[in-house]
Amino acid sequence: MATKLGDWMDDRTGWRTHHATIFLRKIPKINWSYTLGSATLFTMFIQIVTGILLTLYYVPEPQQAYASVSYITNELPFGWLIRGLHHWGASAMVLLVVLHMVRVIIYGAYKYPREFTWITGVALLLLTFAFGFTGYLLPWDQRAYWATVVGTQIGEVTPVVGDTLRAVMLGGEEISGLTLTRFYGAHVWVLPSLLLLLVGIHIFLVIRNGITSVPKRGE
Ligand code: HEM
Image 1: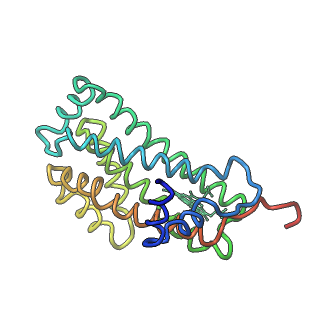
Image 2: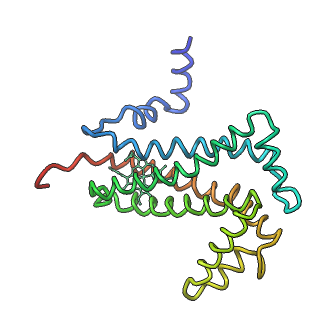
Image 3: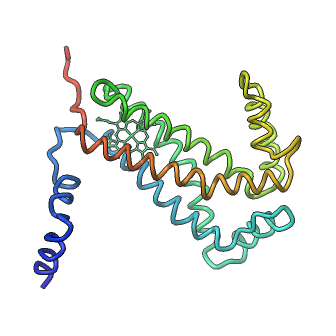
């Protein structure tokens, strides 16, 4: 029955070929450091699932943001777990993406024909940092406020576009309700859309070009 259904679908979608291209491709003899990209991908999925669950109770509004986070942490059944996973998952993702990049550098995996994979990777690194920065403000407590003051002041010293960048981030001269709305919008809509698009291109390129083998002495 399952085989018949599989054949029926294959006739119409060619899924077996795609499945083989993605999951049954030949790879060289590698080591554990090659799992860091997949580990980052896994953390990304954890962040998406826990993030979606958090949006069901979080209120992106200055009067209620702190209270809603406090409710999630202290009263909502398993809220502490979902928030904890999202909180520590964010740090894990930053750590893993940096280690993945270090592996790519050490093995020279950025060289031809993988330059564009590297470029999409750099964009993914910046996106991961942007997630951390925008997410930090959302609990709307003292730590969040001052971290954003520091972050936006750093943005302000960017040559040429500094002032505009700070104004766009803050939605005015100072941190306000509009800043919270903007950071929330970026955190749950803009950045995830870009992340999914770029991860799709990144993984496509990894499959298309195959992965590098561990360099040998003298290579
Ligand atoms: C959200 C962030 C990222 C995800 C989910 C991700 C995912 C992956 C995965 C699953 C692989 C294949 C397995 C592996 O080599 O570990 C890979 C390969 C690769 N990634 Fe990433 N990556 C990310 C960020 C980056 C960054 C920051 C860079 C560099 C700036 C980068 C550059 C590369 C390159 C060049 C390859 C090919 C490696 C090879 O052929 O040996 N990636 N990535």
